[in-house]
Image (tube, rainbow, N blue to C red; front, side, top):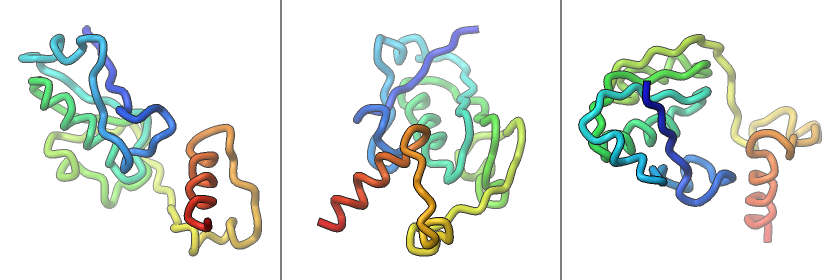
Length: 130
């Protein structure tokens, strides 16, 4: 089984909304004309997986299905989101909040800057406040 990966065009700390995905190292040539299943670790909005499916299709892959280990929004993230069959290994509904509606933010709970996008989020907040 051949496996390749796509990378964020603007670097690993960019959010899915800020960057496209690209195949480097000639991986796009390996996908051309091949059947593929696109897999991500988890999905909150579906944007990263949607971009991964599109990137594989743009490289000439026949995307048969998409999957994640955990779908955090099973009511809204479905096969229709990606245009191919979507089969998560698990679903675990998680409520997400905008910063102005987040109770933890209002209580001053510290944002994790070591895992995830917390550091990037704080940097963007500081830019917006300037």
